[in-house]
Image (tube, rainbow, N blue to C red; front, side, top):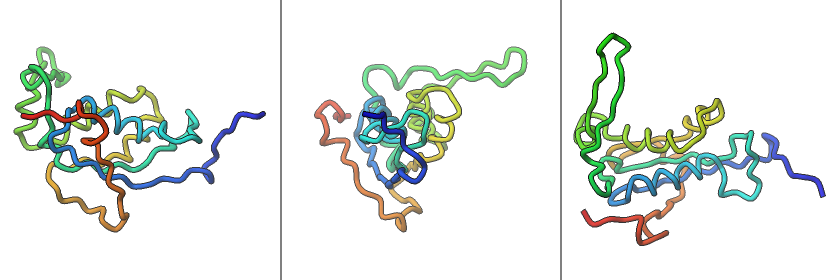
Length: 153
C-alpha cells in the first residue's frame, strides 16, 4: 500500500462556529488548534493546510481555571527597559478580549510558516455578532464534548 498524500484538489474546507461562553480557555484552544490544522480528518497531511475555517464568538466570556486570570503577560517595546505586562484579566476586560483566545490557539500550533498560514483561518469575535453568515457555518458544541470543558464561574 502507498501512503496517501493530499493534494490541493483533495482538500475540503468547512466553516465551523464555536461559542466560547463558559468554556475553559486551554481546552477550547486545543480543540480549535486541532480543527485549524486538520488533524481531525482521516486524510490529514502534515505539510498541507487541511483544516477548517473556525469562527469563535463570545471570546470575552471565556473561563480561566485557578489563578490564571491574575497571571501577567509580558511583551517588550523594543526600547531599553521597555518590558511591559498586563494580566490576563485586564486583557479580557479591555478593548481587545479576543486576543487571549488568539494567543492561546497560536501557541498550540507549531512555530513555522504553515501555522502562520493556518492562523489566517481563525476568526475571533468578542460578542455574538460575526459577518460570516453567508458561509453557513456548522455549530461545534465544545461544552457537550466533555464535562471538564465548562466551568461555573
